Length: 494
Picture (cartoon, helix red, strand yellow):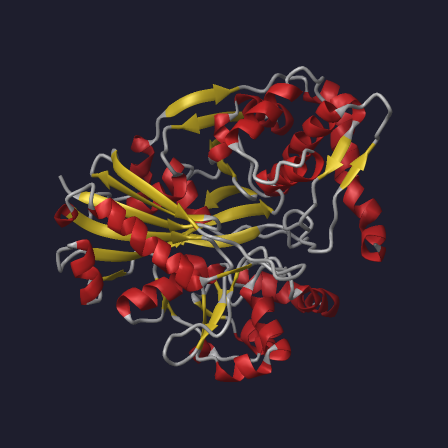
């Protein structure tokens, strides 16, 4: 039976999964790498460190399976990364990740000038320093020597693709999240490029997500012992592959992911945009779009709390398990303690890198357990705001949950209660990597239609709302929804 390989190049690690034609996982491996923050607002990585991790993980996979049985390999990757390379393909800058906000002044300028609205309507990307749109403009002005030497501005996935095949190509999905790509016309957006001071020659060739290459460089082919006719599929961004990987392909079924950050996304046949510019719309494949919002402060907010309040400098799984056990006996609503979780700025729903966190309603009766519960509930309330924005355009009936947080039944039940939706946990090993596998299967004709993926999804757990949201959380929701607007000016002053 043929094997298919999905490679997910994430923010914290690269994960590779091999599965057969029935989507049964036969092998998986992963390796982590570092994020560097040389100063406030920076979020950098070493592109070669990540690429070498990818090579090493594939090498581990090749010792556990018969690589001659691999029919196709497909890539998934985190959105919004960018680095400049010279004519030889060598990096001129570190990889700037989605978490890098140094270009915040450029996002502010676009919003004040009104140009943000125009670019959003063309690209489907809310204006924010996460996007390459703002980052390239920053490089142009702050690193003019780098800008002058730059041959291409590319993402991490494009960097790996060029190393493997010698071609500068970017899939429509990754391109659609740059703020530089007209997702409706499938071309680079002239207005966005003019803002950055570049032309299309500085960017890769856009290709469909099922675009394939077979010309893998010989040294890698020999290293991995692959057939010459193995197809390598361009793939998509990790949000798109996550929806595909868990079978959340209906407009009424949302995919919810919490890792370092978090996101809620629905799939539609047309892009969804709102008047506030709060909903992103990225390409999944062909005429399918993922629409929703990503929050900066997912699991990283819990990590921040453990490190800052409990001095757990390297928080372990046991620390998180202890945290959830401790809050189990705290009443829902944390006895009136609220947490605005914008510790690392925020993307959806406010799209403000200057946003800050806050505890509201502190009383002498509140203990450490109350603060811990408030942090977790604050993340849930933030996701509720994202869901409300989506439902303003597309009603949602249920949610498929993926990510490491699904190990916590308490957190899943909290989300079901606060979001007031049934939440299903599926059997997916890793949604983004599995989504890449399904794209590989589609490219080889094993899957004929994207809906065929749904037969692989099996519900393992179901969480039903307790039905007490209005009684317990109604005031929390109302107060939380107004907190940012009330504090925004003070955040700016601070």
